[in-house]
Amino acid sequence: MKKSLFLLSTTCILAMYSLVKAQTIPTLNATPEQFQAFSQFPDDQTLLMVNFIKFKEKVEGRDISGRELYNQYVEESTGFAEKVGAEVVWYGKPLYVVVGPPQQILWDAMFVIKFPDKMKFFAMGQMPGFPHDKRVQSLSDSRLIACSPDDNFFLTK
Image (cartoon, rainbow, N blue to C red; front, side, top):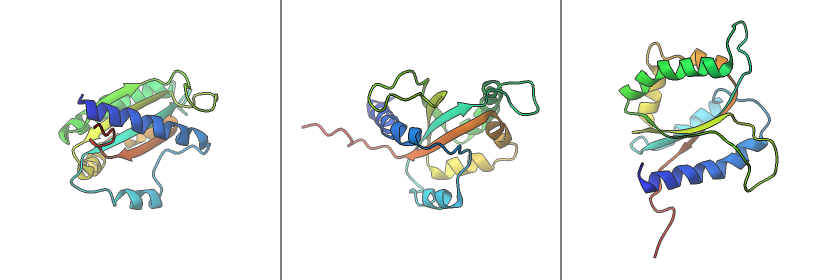
């Protein structure tokens, strides 16, 4: 991973972590207003999608945990991501709050997926057979934050 991408990903995660932690309303899908705002993201720019996810303890009507079903979602969606040139560039499990309110960590996993551009992100989600339902069924809460690469974030002299 390029140093600038790593720094941006880390910075974006750190900056957004405290913001998304404060919200208590579970969210699994974009609102029309969020979708409209995201549509303003440039069509030709690399897109980094920062994901915060919380698994259900047990999936309703099934003898399976949210983590297990989400693993199925990842297995099934990987081929779709590869078709549009997307890749996971960072993955981690939250462990400790180092800076910020000493509250319980709300997320089970965080990761960043890099898409060549916004249109590839949309194309992937609209492909026939994309397993949207498994994502929604497996999670009790999530946040998806669109970021753009910024090679000038850490300016040096």
